[in-house]
Amino acid sequence: MSGSNRNEPPASPTPERELNLRTRRAFLTLGVGAAAGFGAWRWLRGRPQIDGLPRPFRRMLQFNERIAAAYFDERHLAPVFPVSAIQEMRTNGDIGLGDDYDPQEWRLTIKPVTDPGQVRHLALADIRALPKVEHITQLKCIEGWSVVTHWTGARFSEFTEQFARESIQAPYIGIQTPDEAYFVGLDRSSAMHPQTLLCYEMNGAPLTMEHGAPLRLAIPVKYGIKNIKRIGTITYSAERPRDYWAEEGYDWYAGM
Ligand SMILES: Nc1nc2c(c(=O)[nH]1)N[C@H]1C(S)=C(S)[C@@H](COP(=O)(O)O)O[C@H]1N2
Ligand SMILES: [Mo]
Image 1 (cartoon, rainbow, N blue to C red):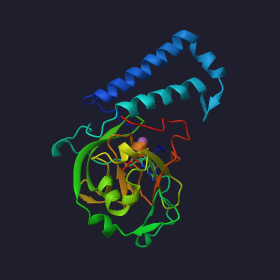
Image 2 (cartoon, rainbow, N blue to C red; image 1 turned 90 degrees about the horizontal axis):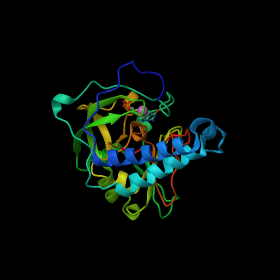
Image 3 (tube, protein in one colour; image 1 turned 180 degrees about the vertical axis):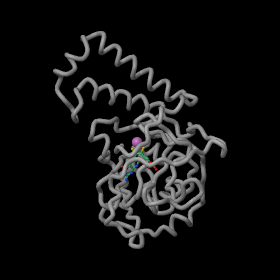
Image 4 (cartoon, rainbow, N blue to C red; image 1 turned 60 degrees about the vertical axis):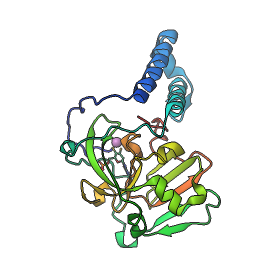
């Protein structure tokens, strides 16, 4: 979300999915209701704040999230695109991608839900050994642009079955960069969604540092903010994990 973007007009609308429409409609209905019913902005500004947002907005986001979670269906796929639609990559966000980092030293840390002290460490080869899955989907930044990208990696669900079997029912997954500066929280059904991949390639080439080498998340059922780059630790948990942008006032769920 930092300012390294070229200024391009927002991408043209893509085919909206039902989930998307229902969620937006619920959001709008409530938003319009709140505005009309209470004389809007001045009133809102005077309200108590929750996580830096006036309480009514926070409540709206929470409501929106409940609707999205209720309608979420693992079989509901994000739109996929033909090879001809693949676009040039764009880079956005470098939180947790500091220079004091040695790719040779990289190991993925797993903290199982049963006992977070029982950490496990994996090498990239362990993830590459899982069935290779590819898809061409859109990375949508909350700032209003998107890029159609070819992603290659392992399904998060298969990764979990293989390396964190005892955690497969954990309701939440938290993922952090090695320096813990960027972190995302995911609900189980989004993480286990068949299109959610631990990626080691983008557009047919190994990940570059700026795109999150050696391993990042591709989660096309979520906005760009959840597509964490340079994954260091994966924690399965019973509690909702912290989330960088949720703490800045964005919707924790950030679903599409
Ligand atoms: N570690 C880390 N991952 C991150 C970010 C970040 O700042 N740090 N930004 C996110 C945001 S806001 C977007 S839109 C995407 C952009 O991915 P890209 O740089 O590969 O296009 O990365 C996401 N993952
Ligand atoms: Mo973003």
